[in-house]
Length: 137
Image (cartoon, rainbow, N blue to C red; front, side):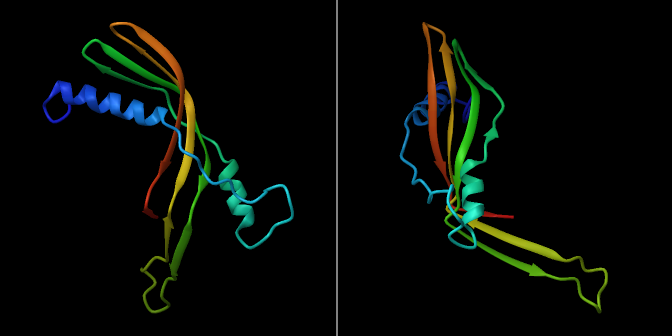
């Protein structure tokens, strides 16, 4: 139930699935098989090739069940990074050093399978492109 309304929950789940089934193009990074082109080139290629396996999920609402399985996210990109480091102080040994990292323009592509049932049924492939603003670590 979403906001106390069962119909709203089903609409939300179906909207998420419909959005997940819509693919959008992602910019391909520079060729990662050649000699490094800059300071961050190895990181760009590592992020692009990284794979994150997400757990299988199942959503039930009334008579409908939607399952999303074998979801793998890859093609990670970050538009920019900003970091700062604060060392421990010689005067105040109890102060711990800290590292702050901001990642901006994060995006990835996730692929997997879906199946639905209830008043019929079906299955297919999921291709979702996700992106966000800034993550503070």
